[in-house]
Image (cartoon, rainbow, N blue to C red):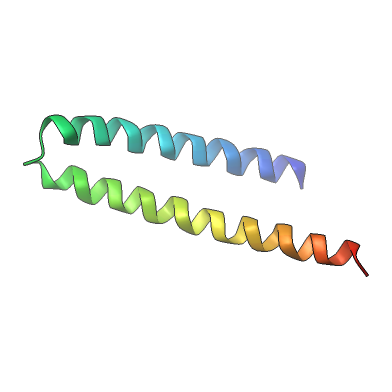
Length: 66
Protein backbone atom coordinates (compact mmCIF):
# COMPACT_ATOMS: atom_id res chain seq x y z
CA UNK A 1 0.00 0.00 0.00
CA UNK A 2 2.93 2.33 0.70
CA UNK A 3 4.22 1.81 -2.85
CA UNK A 4 0.84 2.74 -4.27
CA UNK A 5 0.75 5.94 -2.19
CA UNK A 6 4.24 6.86 -3.35
CA UNK A 7 3.30 6.20 -6.98
CA UNK A 8 0.15 8.30 -6.63
CA UNK A 9 2.13 11.13 -5.05
CA UNK A 10 4.67 11.07 -7.89
CA UNK A 11 1.86 11.09 -10.45
CA UNK A 12 0.18 14.07 -8.74
CA UNK A 13 3.48 15.95 -8.54
CA UNK A 14 4.06 15.37 -12.26
CA UNK A 15 0.58 16.59 -13.09
CA UNK A 16 1.05 19.67 -10.88
CA UNK A 17 4.36 20.46 -12.56
CA UNK A 18 2.78 20.19 -16.00
CA UNK A 19 -0.15 22.35 -14.88
CA UNK A 20 2.18 25.02 -13.49
CA UNK A 21 4.15 25.11 -16.74
CA UNK A 22 0.97 25.44 -18.78
CA UNK A 23 -0.27 28.20 -16.49
CA UNK A 24 2.96 30.17 -16.92
CA UNK A 25 2.57 29.90 -20.69
CA UNK A 26 -1.11 30.87 -20.47
CA UNK A 27 -0.33 34.00 -18.41
CA UNK A 28 2.06 35.13 -21.14
CA UNK A 29 -0.40 34.30 -23.94
CA UNK A 30 -4.00 34.41 -22.65
CA UNK A 31 -5.35 34.20 -26.19
CA UNK A 32 -4.18 30.56 -26.36
CA UNK A 33 -7.41 29.15 -24.98
CA UNK A 34 -6.30 25.57 -25.57
CA UNK A 35 -3.85 26.08 -22.69
CA UNK A 36 -6.75 26.98 -20.38
CA UNK A 37 -8.57 23.82 -21.43
CA UNK A 38 -5.49 21.68 -20.76
CA UNK A 39 -5.10 23.33 -17.34
CA UNK A 40 -8.75 22.60 -16.53
CA UNK A 41 -8.36 18.95 -17.48
CA UNK A 42 -5.31 18.63 -15.23
CA UNK A 43 -7.10 20.41 -12.38
CA UNK A 44 -10.03 18.01 -12.73
CA UNK A 45 -7.72 14.99 -12.75
CA UNK A 46 -5.89 16.26 -9.68
CA UNK A 47 -9.18 16.83 -7.86
CA UNK A 48 -10.44 13.35 -8.74
CA UNK A 49 -7.17 11.83 -7.58
CA UNK A 50 -7.49 13.45 -4.18
CA UNK A 51 -11.05 12.27 -3.48
CA UNK A 52 -10.30 8.53 -3.16
CA UNK A 53 -7.18 9.23 -1.12
CA UNK A 54 -9.15 11.22 1.45
CA UNK A 55 -11.86 8.56 1.54
CA UNK A 56 -9.27 5.84 2.11
CA UNK A 57 -7.71 7.80 4.96
CA UNK A 58 -11.07 8.30 6.64
CA UNK A 59 -12.11 4.67 6.30
CA UNK A 60 -8.79 3.38 7.63
CA UNK A 61 -9.00 5.86 10.52
CA UNK A 62 -12.50 4.69 11.37
CA UNK A 63 -11.30 1.11 11.33
CA UNK A 64 -8.82 1.82 14.11
CA UNK A 65 -11.51 3.14 16.41
CA UNK A 66 -13.44 -0.15 16.52
